[in-house]
Image 1 (tube, rainbow, N blue to C red):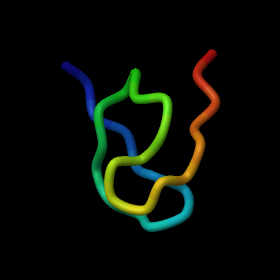
Image 2: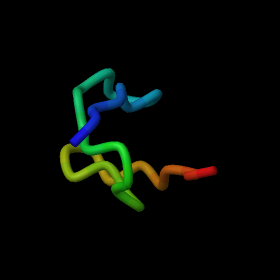
Image 3: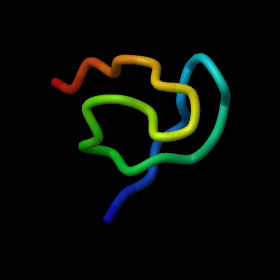
Length: 30
């Protein structure tokens, strides 16, 4: 499972998350 950095809170989150579980920022997955 790949990790990416949330652009809002800079925490590592799962690549295919729809929202950041830390800050709730909606992520756009391509």
